[in-house]
Amino acid sequence: MIRLDLNENPYSPPKEVIDEAKKGLSEVRRYCDPKYLEELRNLIEEYTKIPKDKIVVSPGSDIILREVIHEFSIDRKVIAVNPSFFPALECAKRHARKLVRFQLTPPEFRLNSEVLMQEIRDPSLIIIDNPNNPTGVEVLDRDLIIKILENTNSLLLVDEAYYEFSLKTSSGLINDFDNLAITRTLDKGFSLAGLRVGYLLAGEKFREGLSDFITFLPRPSVYAAITALKNRDYMRENVEKIIRERKRLMNELKELGIEAFPSSTNFILIRSDVVGLSGRLRSKGIAIKDLSREWIPGYYRISIGLPEENDLLLKSLKELLNKES
Image (cartoon, rainbow, N blue to C red; front, side, top):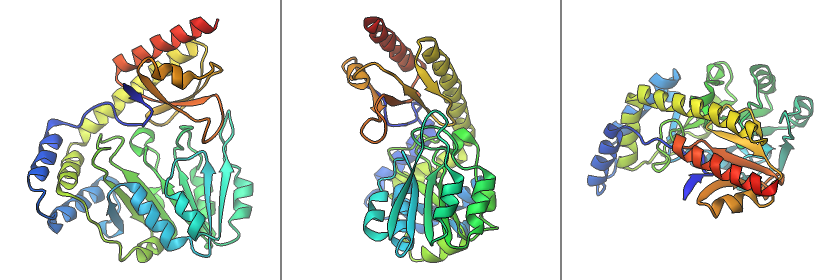
């Protein structure tokens, strides 16, 4: 099965990273020495330019997001957009005063900033992925982020899982606004989805609320993350290859008459009237994400695969479209 449904990086990490993960596995009977977690934080500080005392490392960004919701959602609204894929939002239904989701509608997928600003007059925790998954668009610009943060009733968490692809970040505002936090992951750009390493860049309010959060990661994950962050040029080369392939796939899809939307990530959102598209592709050994259950029928998310995988996708789509005509 060609998996183009999970937004994974199709390229393996460098050999040095795999070797370090194996080394960690050989020592798996031992807890990870805190000195390695400290080295990991030092490297994240170097990478993000955020002081390490504002960095919280976690086994995947969803774990730290759950912790944020547990800590900060009581007596607050939790505000998010739809669609988005945050399993932790289920916690908000139990803990928050109210869960509000703003619909992103095609073709522009814009967030209604006026309605949002009205909604956050009450104490609110806003959780938004930027760029958004699955639309691939940036729903927050710097001006809107600042307007939100200037409202002292608001806490804003921006998920930047696709930062390595968009190169857009709000991290420069962390030192100016204590009510801002940013989550990131090594899953996407660094090819470490199977090891689950994420981190939070925390403004002071978030840092205080998470002061008792205990970071615990297994040795294979820590060793691999350290080495991956030391090999950022390798990561950038792979990201550039994915972006080039994304552009090629966009053009090819449009030539087939499939509506494909601009993306700042490692995936493309498409719209197709072909009935049962995802199931018919799966029967050909290709998995894409059908968004009809979570969002709108006829919309699909396609992760960027290896060139040969994308070629097989295009060939299969062409065959299906020929049968429809």
